[in-house]
Image (cartoon, rainbow, N blue to C red):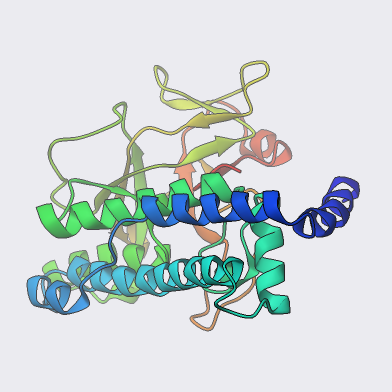
Length: 299
């Protein structure tokens, strides 16, 4: 809080410095705009991936594209307006002043966070993350359904999880509300084949523990290493009556390390994703005291 307050004070004086700041902002806006991939053609996407009874992932992809297009427009419009304001074609409003301060301090601007997925990254890392997510969807659109899914790359992760369940429910004619997930942690980072049922997902990080690949169990962190990368996780839809956590640790998955969110209109938390069962030699209370969780992205 102290450092943020100091930065806020210095940020306001920095924006008044004139020429040097204007030159930096112009360069920064041009750099970000130059790195953004093209937006999604929604008409083409709906034609190539129509709504199908047997394939819910088509709907998931199209809806994700719409959400990212909305954020893409917010980012590109604000950067272009900033460029115009610097050369005097647009009046400098308080909102633009606030936007320029965020750029100078390397923070995600407020005009972006309103339409963005949760993120605690600084500005350069946020832009790189956004570009990577867009490219993931572009690859999916061009090459077809992926064998493995980057679960952290989704804007609304619950839609993807529902899509996985829905495919299973329609394939075996089981009501979707009678399904839940079981989990198998694989020993590999990638796969050239997709599972018959469910989905392979990657992109999760451990927080408070590490995953022992050889033993296939939760283990204590190595010194000075705070996070570990999880291998592929197989999400397996099963009936509630077949669900048996056993002695596995019920590990919560969060989108960011803040571990708190607000309840959205869909009834889902903006930060919490789902619980994943992880094998362990120790009692689950040990990991609960460690506050062990999985994160979709690091800070």
